[in-house]
Image 1 (cartoon, rainbow over the protein chains, first blue to last red):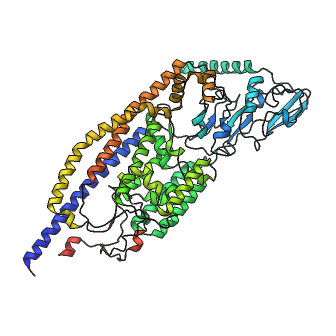
Image 2 (image 1 turned 90 degrees about the vertical axis):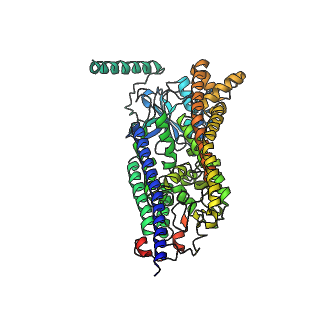
Length: 200
Length: 433
């Protein structure tokens, strides 16, 4: 075998190996750099970490009943429903959340009801008290009753995000348009802000 | 002292709150005589609360399996089944939220907003795919991303796109990433989630526009494979750059490439690089290219400054995306809007008792953030443009058909086309001797 040819072959191979090594060296250096910066990022973010998960909820004291909860939720119908904090209810016959303002007779006909979907059930208890129950199947979260109850009554009717329905989007699409910033992140182990049950 | 004070303060707080709610009660609660039992409002638990750690474990397993299938086992069929599982689990079952792509925004918000705290699982979701990519390439895209999976399954008749068009379109993800981080860091909004094209399909329920965009993307995916991944995905920017330096990566051939060209058209994403013609690497061309390369490398600072200046200067326009800035500007330029009873935002502001001065102050703080952030965003985009132009003049020596480590999604389609049999590894130096 030609020794000269063999020599040339070895030199070429060695050059290739050397070149190969340089590329490997750069790659390894970059790998370490990226690894260190990822670790740095993780450390910076870790100091701002919490073990609890967040869910979205409406602060009923900030809510201005604008009606966007019914229209801006990614769910249709909205995951926002009216809830009734019975503790605060006056059990009135003339309920500001149930009847339209200025009804002549306290009749339960649809023309007298504030709720567009007749989702509030009115039940006689004893003279002169009535109980009001929200049918969540029908409620669309439009806050018309909330507005009436807050304006004329005790404000026991208020909106809450129902977590069995909520998709828990990374950013709540209602929060984005809420004019009073009433939709806030709350820890998932206390997912409701029901009036009378929490202190703001 | 503090330990004594705290309960006292707490007591005062509780007392005040009760007092206020007592005053609010216009109609006191009646005392019932008929033994009426008052119901209490129901509080259904959030769905899948315990699932968040299960999700982390599933992600870890899927990533490990995907990496093994792509790099070691070399099984396209395995990756296909895995992506089907991912689509079912992370997509249709877990409804696509939280995903590593959207987690970019949570991480940015956590770093810049002193109030916001990021959930530990979200941080892990953000980091895990990046770490795996550092070692195995973009196996996340192949097997663990539901958005990638739904597009990948629809690759029917992919067309090849010229390199120049691809490079130009490839700039869009950088813009998207930059703006997503800026908007999240300033607390404006989560752009990536708002314009996520597939989350509506996973939920089978979404606003009209979301569904239209989603279906358009899926139709496009049939001819232009993985349109979201290649032209929009902001997380893909991070994955692509990390993958370029990955320790291991999927290879087309299990042994030595015989340049049979069978795999040449197998990649629907144009991610296979052909061997470089040695004529392109003759000494005069290389020298000329090196000169151009150095000139454009020196121009990079100019790009950075130009970009930073341009974006920072447009802070007035950009900051309008923030609702507070928008409202403040609206009230200043159109004071008559205060009489518009239909404008909910204006009316809510007027009723809130907040003064105009307060609103303007808040708005100018946000605008200042956009001005500072604009320098970083513009500088970043300028840097990307500079590097993209500079890199045109590098012609690397390539003797085999190889996947482009940045662009390759590790889907493994090309491996099926390679006729080379696997053989025991030999020391290349020994062999040639």
